[in-house]
Image: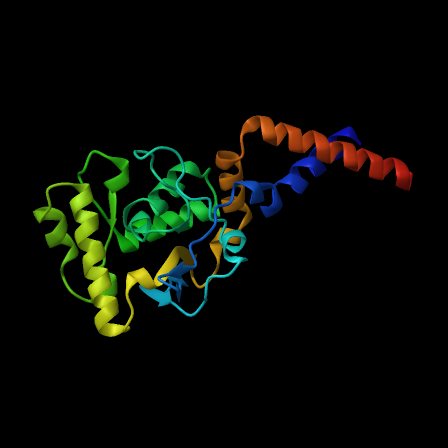
Length: 231
């Protein structure tokens, strides 16, 4: 019974409600204009990148996409699949999450994405080790040229962002500053709500002492429930 209580404690706290106090507000307006969610979908089966722009940011957006903002200092490799800047997904989030995950389905899927949609560089900095191949978006042969002609990782990301923005303006009649949050989908699935991803965010965002406190509170409530039910 004691072991079952501990298991139940873990199950109860590992959900989005345990992370809620650490979520950040998503910017929803830009000069009184409503902003939308920018969904980047990696379609592994068809080897293409799709976008979805239709969802408006609301009071539920932060929890739906577990938006925790920047994790750690300015030099920390980011691994969140929701970000307020597209730059995070151009070079960090997929590889950062891949490094954080234990072996399993999601890690294998991220490996496929890195191999199919990203270019491995020789830059000695994990934040720029893998760069999004925007040729998969624009249809032009420009990513390699930008990587080889740029001085450093920051300049690469700046130039790639500029090219993506130009593509969106010309082909979708929309600009990057129309969006307040950029989120990753995989095969049209909101992977942010998966257990593997939720566990990683929980472990890295919630302080250990708070996790222990939550566990103790949930265990007490579960024990009281067991006693009342006579289980």
